[in-house]
Image (cartoon, rainbow, N blue to C red):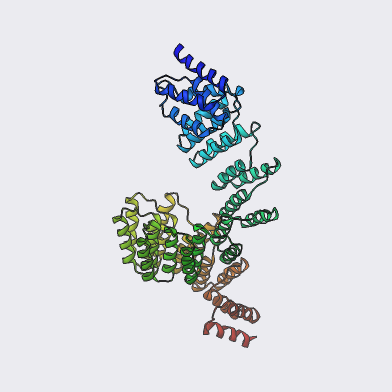
Length: 563
């Protein structure tokens, strides 16, 4: 024990005499080589003088040796930390050592050790500097420990440490990623109250969060506010805006922002290009999509699987399966591995052209490659088989889903229900509907519309009307398909008055009727002798781009002659 104390005494004596940290460090390392056992006191002392002398690389190397247990069998980082905390008031460089400890633990993702260190600091009323606090928060958030990050934030930033723009931006970004925009906005307001000016990172996180929430108005407001403050949007801001607009269907605004971005000399990144290529493909503008694809290459932005998936989807949408296969081949040649989205896109493409055999072969290829088909894979196939009237095969795929432990969705059951309706098998259609609801799945407007269609086809109008009321009681608004089905059903059943009543109801709700509904309403009005209203509806029908049949024109003509 006395031998250990003498090592510490020598270190203190040497430093007090020479104030030469390099000389003290050389002695410390020499003593280590001679087999001397260092204590927490001697180790924390050398760390402090190294930090004070800004010999940070040497201090960090020494800390790494302590953590790895290379300095002494009995020396632990916990003991060193306790000694540092106990003596931090005597040495203003202690926080630098803690910065390094936090940094080492953070880089190594040693979360338990990091939290122990933090708790030791807290228990001894040691207030870390803002950089250490931010390092802690960053590590916790990157490791998915969001709750822990909030605990640290609450403990440190409610009086002890003044948060900076980096702190606020990190926590606001965390809220946005979780979809908690109310908390994000509260933090933003708190930031303003504390006199901390938000930067482009803060605004970009909020803009992205509100776009993902679907609140385009608030996202726009923040972007305008950001510009008013003189903050210049960067590539990430533009990417959030472009992606946000394109995802919500405002493609032209996304394209306009891309042009603005280029005019300002801001080079789009991979995510920007992927958003734009996907948007152009969804618009059916494949030429522009491929222009951007080539532009990426010329600007040194490497394509990824998402890029190719967007192009393949665009080609499949317009029935260019051969070109889609070429894109897949190029993708593989580029060293990229097709993922489940790639395979699902091809399944969808073949199903759309009615080639369900090839679509099912893609499912087999997926399995052979070790990829597990997901609910989307099966839903697409089931829907495809139902569309071509191959109901037994679709039921077989439903059973396979169950065998694989995949839970069918409302879409799965609705596709099958609609297929049974088309086969006039209402017994099995309602059986599937009951099975679906027993599983806790909620029917949607498409499900009810399919069942109503089946009932109308069978002239079961009272049952159809009952379902129509049930869906509205459950808070579902009937769509154009629901109304048009019922209008036609009542007309076919001889109840023209009820058919016309539903027609008026859908028009009042600003739902656009189809040709059949217009024709039925015009015929009803003509028979009632209301030629003025019949003519108005005929004109409205033509203006909406619908072509009335000869019967409709004759009905109006008859009404005009009667008038």
